[in-house]
Image (cartoon, rainbow, N blue to C red):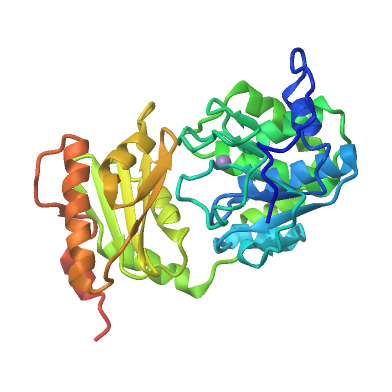
Length: 363
Ligand SMILES: [Mn+2]
């Protein structure tokens, strides 16, 4: 089991005047191995942050590192990233934790309901850009900066600070991770993100990025989009889409990304059943939308949620996935979303008229 880093005899060094990257590295001096973990179903920001920090630790400290995979990597682009960049990930449930492992969590914070690592694994460090508060009291090294568009930006700055030469693989991963977080519309980026992108761009393999970004889609993708289109209802400036059977958990976010482009709405919500959970994704077209706060309020004690201004995600464990039970949860969520957005209770209007759906049914 990983050692209790917070309680162990850490090297005490004066922190005054030290850069965060120095403090990060100094605290790892007695580590046997540095293990990286991220949130469940890691995204490109998580994957690249682990890779970038592993490169930093290996180059500067010469210590072995290991990157883990919590949950699934299912989105086509993310699977392509792992394949094209040949990322070596150990499923977190198969980890053989060692006494002298120092564990670093990226792109997430402990006890936010977004991990499956055992509670007994103590964390040395947390690097994140989410404003979802986690339990950080036993963590020695914390660098959480919600002002940054991506965790990759923090990691790139550490590498720049330390003057570490980047391999093409590391630069490509970091640029793609950063890009996926900040180049959406509307973007949530800072000048620090732009600096990191300018640094990474010439070093990255743009052909590989194109290959990842345009990853081929599985057959099931289209059926899920059809389900979502057929179940989408508009309530004033909100569109809600339900999918009874998500083929992979990240599709809820892809559907919400698609729906928020509808010119008549400011808010898009997608809820989809995956396994025994209802996966929720929220997008807003408004500046300062505080989507994360909104979704946390809506989900309440039904599950977990968090996110950014214009994007948020959540997960509700379902006691039953029988149609009527799922419909009850959907009805409750619909009521709560309307209330939170101060939209009067109303019958929703179908995004695609029923007549057209019926006409298109196979005879
Ligand atoms: Mn991120």
